[in-house]
Image (cartoon, rainbow, N blue to C red; front, side, top):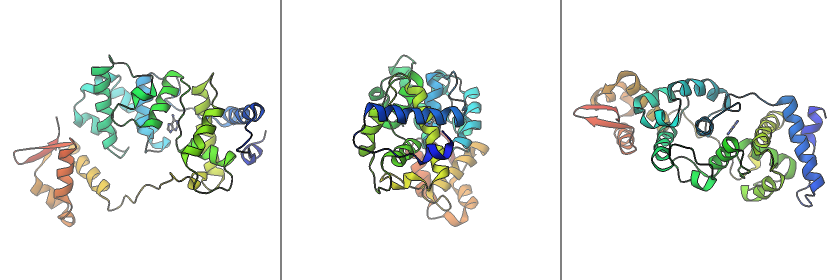
Length: 286
Ligand code: ADE
């Protein structure tokens, strides 16, 4: 099937017969054969590597994750090394991925895996959701990619596929409406291959059409970065990673236009466990 035809095809939402499911699966796998991506976490990845990749991919684009992923694994090759890492090293390795809270949650997840799961990433989605930073969708993705479990989950690219083929023209579609279709069409024999193929088709659909995900009630653009608290938090952490220590007074001098926000943001970073104040100096915690 030529690509354009593949992408134009539509499926009715009701009357999802075995034949229609088979046809849809064929379409998804055909696309994967022609246009599937080779990504570093797809080949011979350990459950730990899958965990790391899925947390990185939660809020960061694939192209930005790819180079960081291999550097991160070289520095933290297994759960134990991540669990034991100084936060400074962890944040240094996380630079460029954004949303540093994820790094902290990922390390806390690694520590919980060491302490409560004998050092092995759990395979059960419900158990995975008990770990810091792992919501139901990330849990499903880890179960599917790390353990080839037929878990049901949605992320932005998967959402795009189901909106495109099953909810053509409909607005404000909720995941609750998509989930039965994700369940019904899932390739029970090859969940890992299936979800890789679905995601790659979703990426292609987003490029070929006005992003179908905009018709999801869950669609949200990342809020503006310029001038945001998130930006200033990131700047403070980057500065502390690079320089080790700084006094609140010196920090104020670096950001003369941020006198109002700085104390609150520093306090937040302390409360969340990113930084500590020792004497007159702020520094990365532990
Ligand atoms: N987004 C979330 N998980 C992903 C994965 N495994 N591959 C590509 N994009 C993703």
